[in-house]
Amino acid sequence: MKIAFVSAGVLAFCLIAGCGRPVVKEEPIVASSEIPVIERAELLGRQIYMQDLYAAQATALLLAHGLDLIDIGTLGWITESSRDGCAVTFVAGDPEQWRSVCVVTFAESAEPNIILVDRDLTETQSAMFNARQLALHSIEKSCSDAYNTVVLPRDDGPGWLGYALAATNDPNLILIGGHSRVTVSADGRTILERRSFTKDCMVLKTPQDVGPDVDVAAYTVGHVLDNTPTEVHVFLSLLYGKPLYVVTADRRFWYIEGGKIRILKRP
Image (spheres, rainbow, N blue to C red):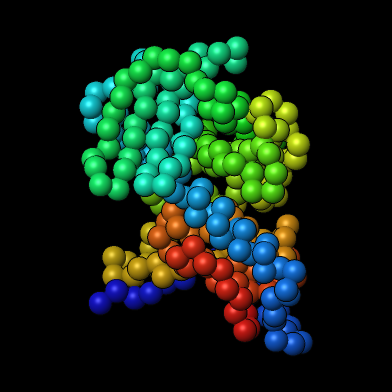
Protein backbone atom coordinates (compact mmCIF):
# COMPACT_ATOMS: atom_id res chain seq x y z
CA MET A 1 0.00 0.00 0.00
CA LYS A 2 1.35 3.39 -0.98
CA ILE A 3 1.27 6.34 1.40
CA ALA A 4 0.07 9.66 0.00
CA PHE A 5 2.50 12.57 0.20
CA VAL A 6 1.74 16.21 -0.55
CA SER A 7 4.73 18.08 -1.98
CA ALA A 8 4.85 21.78 -1.12
CA GLY A 9 6.57 24.57 -3.01
CA VAL A 10 8.85 26.95 -1.14
CA LEU A 11 6.50 29.92 -1.06
CA ALA A 12 3.39 27.92 -0.35
CA PHE A 13 5.17 25.99 2.39
CA CYS A 14 6.15 29.29 3.98
CA LEU A 15 2.59 30.55 3.83
CA ILE A 16 1.07 27.38 5.21
CA ALA A 17 3.61 26.07 7.70
CA GLY A 18 6.86 27.97 8.15
CA CYS A 19 5.57 31.52 8.55
CA GLY A 20 2.48 30.98 10.62
CA ARG A 21 -0.93 29.73 9.64
CA PRO A 22 -2.97 32.26 7.64
CA VAL A 23 -5.79 33.86 9.58
CA VAL A 24 -9.14 33.39 7.86
CA LYS A 25 -11.64 35.98 9.05
CA GLU A 26 -14.49 34.81 6.89
CA GLU A 27 -15.41 32.03 4.53
CA PRO A 28 -13.53 32.52 1.24
CA ILE A 29 -15.82 33.13 -1.69
CA VAL A 30 -15.55 33.52 -5.42
CA ALA A 31 -16.88 36.89 -6.54
CA SER A 32 -19.16 36.97 -9.57
CA SER A 33 -16.52 39.02 -11.41
CA GLU A 34 -13.99 36.23 -10.85
CA ILE A 35 -16.09 33.46 -12.39
CA PRO A 36 -15.32 34.33 -16.05
CA VAL A 37 -11.63 34.75 -15.10
CA ILE A 38 -11.57 31.25 -13.61
CA GLU A 39 -13.51 29.73 -16.51
CA ARG A 40 -11.10 31.33 -18.97
CA ALA A 41 -8.10 29.97 -17.04
CA GLU A 42 -9.64 26.49 -17.12
CA LEU A 43 -10.33 26.64 -20.86
CA LEU A 44 -6.90 28.04 -21.79
CA GLY A 45 -5.12 25.60 -19.48
CA ARG A 46 -6.83 22.62 -21.10
CA GLN A 47 -6.09 23.98 -24.59
CA ILE A 48 -2.43 24.53 -23.73
CA TYR A 49 -2.17 21.01 -22.36
CA MET A 50 -3.77 19.38 -25.41
CA GLN A 51 -1.65 21.30 -27.90
CA ASP A 52 1.52 20.58 -25.93
CA LEU A 53 0.56 16.90 -25.78
CA TYR A 54 -0.06 16.68 -29.53
CA ALA A 55 3.26 18.41 -30.26
CA ALA A 56 5.12 15.99 -27.98
CA GLN A 57 3.43 12.98 -29.58
CA ALA A 58 4.19 14.26 -33.07
CA THR A 59 7.85 14.81 -32.20
CA ALA A 60 8.15 11.34 -30.67
CA LEU A 61 6.49 9.81 -33.73
CA LEU A 62 8.93 11.47 -36.12
CA LEU A 63 11.91 10.35 -34.05
CA ALA A 64 10.54 6.79 -33.94
CA HIS A 65 10.45 6.84 -37.76
CA GLY A 66 14.04 8.02 -37.96
CA LEU A 67 13.28 11.62 -38.93
CA ASP A 68 15.73 14.06 -37.33
CA LEU A 69 14.07 17.43 -36.87
CA ILE A 70 17.36 19.29 -37.11
CA ASP A 71 18.36 17.47 -40.28
CA ILE A 72 15.12 18.50 -41.98
CA GLY A 73 15.65 22.12 -40.95
CA THR A 74 12.90 22.40 -38.36
CA LEU A 75 12.87 25.63 -36.35
CA GLY A 76 9.71 24.85 -34.39
CA TRP A 77 6.08 23.93 -34.83
CA ILE A 78 2.53 25.13 -34.71
CA THR A 79 -0.50 23.10 -33.69
CA GLU A 80 -3.90 23.69 -35.27
CA SER A 81 -6.97 22.16 -33.68
CA SER A 82 -9.91 20.81 -35.61
CA ARG A 83 -13.25 19.31 -34.65
CA ASP A 84 -11.95 15.71 -34.62
CA GLY A 85 -8.23 16.18 -33.90
CA CYS A 86 -5.39 18.43 -34.85
CA ALA A 87 -2.40 18.92 -37.14
CA VAL A 88 1.14 19.66 -35.98
CA THR A 89 3.16 21.48 -38.64
CA PHE A 90 6.93 21.56 -38.36
CA VAL A 91 8.29 24.78 -39.79
CA ALA A 92 11.50 25.84 -41.55
CA GLY A 93 12.52 28.86 -43.64
CA ASP A 94 12.70 32.50 -42.58
CA PRO A 95 10.31 35.32 -41.62
CA GLU A 96 9.97 36.38 -45.25
CA GLN A 97 8.36 33.05 -46.05
CA TRP A 98 7.97 30.29 -43.51
CA ARG A 99 7.35 26.84 -44.97
CA SER A 100 6.33 23.45 -43.69
CA VAL A 101 8.66 20.49 -43.91
CA CYS A 102 6.40 17.94 -42.25
CA VAL A 103 2.85 17.69 -40.93
CA VAL A 104 1.59 15.13 -38.42
CA THR A 105 -2.18 14.80 -38.30
CA PHE A 106 -4.23 13.31 -35.47
CA ALA A 107 -7.84 12.21 -35.79
CA GLU A 108 -10.04 10.34 -33.35
CA SER A 109 -10.80 7.48 -35.71
CA ALA A 110 -7.39 7.03 -37.32
CA GLU A 111 -3.75 6.47 -36.52
CA PRO A 112 -1.47 9.54 -36.61
CA ASN A 113 -0.34 10.30 -40.14
CA ILE A 114 3.05 11.71 -41.16
CA ILE A 115 3.05 13.89 -44.28
CA LEU A 116 6.39 15.08 -45.63
CA VAL A 117 5.53 18.23 -47.52
CA ASP A 118 7.63 21.24 -48.50
CA ARG A 119 5.30 24.15 -49.10
CA ASP A 120 4.76 27.72 -47.98
CA LEU A 121 2.68 28.27 -44.88
CA THR A 122 -0.68 29.90 -45.28
CA GLU A 123 -1.13 33.47 -44.08
CA THR A 124 -2.77 32.25 -40.87
CA GLN A 125 -0.07 29.65 -40.25
CA SER A 126 2.66 32.24 -40.83
CA ALA A 127 1.00 34.57 -38.32
CA MET A 128 0.89 31.73 -35.77
CA PHE A 129 4.55 30.93 -36.24
CA ASN A 130 5.47 34.62 -36.01
CA ALA A 131 3.61 34.72 -32.69
CA ARG A 132 5.47 31.61 -31.61
CA GLN A 133 8.82 33.25 -32.35
CA LEU A 134 7.83 36.40 -30.46
CA ALA A 135 6.85 34.30 -27.44
CA LEU A 136 10.27 32.65 -27.39
CA HIS A 137 12.21 35.85 -27.95
CA SER A 138 10.25 37.70 -25.27
CA ILE A 139 11.31 35.51 -22.34
CA GLU A 140 12.56 37.98 -19.75
CA LYS A 141 14.11 35.49 -17.32
CA SER A 142 15.02 32.09 -18.65
CA CYS A 143 14.41 29.24 -16.21
CA SER A 144 15.40 26.37 -18.48
CA ASP A 145 17.61 25.47 -21.41
CA ALA A 146 14.52 24.15 -23.21
CA TYR A 147 11.18 25.78 -23.91
CA ASN A 148 8.06 24.45 -25.54
CA THR A 149 5.57 26.73 -27.24
CA VAL A 150 1.83 26.90 -27.74
CA VAL A 151 -0.06 29.42 -29.87
CA LEU A 152 -3.81 29.87 -29.41
CA PRO A 153 -6.29 32.22 -31.08
CA ARG A 154 -7.30 35.11 -28.84
CA ASP A 155 -10.75 34.71 -27.36
CA ASP A 156 -11.34 38.44 -26.88
CA GLY A 157 -10.43 39.79 -30.30
CA PRO A 158 -8.26 39.19 -33.36
CA GLY A 159 -4.75 37.94 -32.75
CA TRP A 160 -2.91 35.26 -30.84
CA LEU A 161 -1.78 34.14 -27.42
CA GLY A 162 1.77 32.83 -27.58
CA TYR A 163 3.03 30.78 -24.63
CA ALA A 164 6.66 29.98 -23.82
CA LEU A 165 6.67 27.03 -21.41
CA ALA A 166 9.80 26.10 -19.49
CA ALA A 167 10.49 22.39 -20.02
CA THR A 168 12.73 19.68 -18.62
CA ASN A 169 13.50 16.05 -19.36
CA ASP A 170 14.19 15.34 -15.67
CA PRO A 171 11.18 13.36 -14.36
CA ASN A 172 12.03 14.42 -10.80
CA LEU A 173 11.63 18.15 -11.50
CA ILE A 174 8.48 20.22 -11.94
CA LEU A 175 9.12 23.68 -13.33
CA ILE A 176 6.60 26.01 -11.72
CA GLY A 177 8.45 29.16 -12.77
CA GLY A 178 9.63 30.43 -16.12
CA HIS A 179 6.38 30.32 -18.08
CA SER A 180 5.24 33.43 -19.95
CA ARG A 181 2.62 34.67 -22.41
CA VAL A 182 2.49 37.30 -25.11
CA THR A 183 -0.64 38.70 -26.71
CA VAL A 184 0.13 39.26 -30.38
CA SER A 185 -1.52 41.08 -33.28
CA ALA A 186 -3.40 39.18 -35.99
CA ASP A 187 -0.38 39.14 -38.33
CA GLY A 188 1.80 37.76 -35.55
CA ARG A 189 4.32 40.58 -35.77
CA THR A 190 3.44 42.95 -32.91
CA ILE A 191 3.33 42.27 -29.18
CA LEU A 192 0.28 43.91 -27.63
CA GLU A 193 0.81 42.65 -24.09
CA ARG A 194 3.20 40.39 -22.23
CA ARG A 195 3.25 38.75 -18.85
CA SER A 196 5.25 36.30 -16.77
CA PHE A 197 3.36 33.93 -14.51
CA THR A 198 5.95 33.92 -11.71
CA LYS A 199 8.60 36.24 -10.30
CA ASP A 200 11.28 33.57 -10.04
CA CYS A 201 12.33 30.16 -11.31
CA MET A 202 10.45 28.05 -8.81
CA VAL A 203 11.11 24.31 -9.09
CA LEU A 204 9.46 21.44 -7.24
CA LYS A 205 11.43 18.25 -6.76
CA THR A 206 9.88 14.84 -6.44
CA PRO A 207 10.98 13.59 -3.01
CA GLN A 208 13.73 11.00 -3.26
CA ASP A 209 14.10 10.10 0.41
CA VAL A 210 10.59 9.01 1.34
CA GLY A 211 10.79 5.46 0.05
CA PRO A 212 9.20 3.54 -2.86
CA ASP A 213 5.90 3.04 -1.01
CA VAL A 214 5.15 6.76 -0.89
CA ASP A 215 3.25 8.38 -3.76
CA VAL A 216 2.90 12.10 -4.33
CA ALA A 217 -0.80 12.83 -3.95
CA ALA A 218 -0.69 16.53 -4.84
CA TYR A 219 1.56 19.54 -5.16
CA THR A 220 1.24 22.87 -3.39
CA VAL A 221 2.49 26.22 -4.69
CA GLY A 222 2.18 29.88 -3.83
CA HIS A 223 1.19 32.47 -6.41
CA VAL A 224 1.68 36.16 -5.58
CA LEU A 225 0.81 37.79 -8.91
CA ASP A 226 -2.94 37.11 -9.03
CA ASN A 227 -5.88 36.50 -6.73
CA THR A 228 -6.99 33.48 -8.74
CA PRO A 229 -5.07 30.59 -10.32
CA THR A 230 -4.01 30.99 -13.94
CA GLU A 231 -4.11 28.82 -17.03
CA VAL A 232 -0.53 27.75 -16.32
CA HIS A 233 -1.61 26.20 -13.01
CA VAL A 234 -4.31 24.24 -14.84
CA PHE A 235 -1.78 23.17 -17.48
CA LEU A 236 0.77 22.00 -14.90
CA SER A 237 -1.83 19.98 -13.00
CA LEU A 238 -2.84 18.22 -16.22
CA LEU A 239 0.74 17.81 -17.40
CA TYR A 240 1.91 16.04 -14.26
CA GLY A 241 -1.36 14.25 -13.62
CA LYS A 242 -1.65 15.45 -10.02
CA PRO A 243 -3.94 17.83 -8.15
CA LEU A 244 -2.44 21.23 -7.48
CA TYR A 245 -3.10 23.37 -4.41
CA VAL A 246 -2.53 27.09 -5.00
CA VAL A 247 -2.27 29.83 -2.38
CA THR A 248 -2.96 33.11 -4.18
CA ALA A 249 -1.91 36.68 -3.41
CA ASP A 250 -4.98 37.32 -1.22
CA ARG A 251 -4.17 34.17 0.79
CA ARG A 252 -7.10 32.15 -0.47
CA PHE A 253 -6.59 28.44 -0.94
CA TRP A 254 -7.49 26.79 -4.27
CA TYR A 255 -7.60 23.24 -5.58
CA ILE A 256 -7.08 22.24 -9.23
CA GLU A 257 -7.76 18.78 -10.61
CA GLY A 258 -8.89 17.47 -13.99
CA GLY A 259 -8.69 20.93 -15.54
CA LYS A 260 -11.12 22.44 -13.01
CA ILE A 261 -10.45 25.12 -10.38
CA ARG A 262 -12.32 25.34 -7.12
CA ILE A 263 -11.80 27.28 -3.91
CA LEU A 264 -11.41 25.50 -0.58
CA LYS A 265 -13.32 26.59 2.48
CA ARG A 266 -10.18 27.01 4.57
CA PRO A 267 -6.38 26.70 4.20
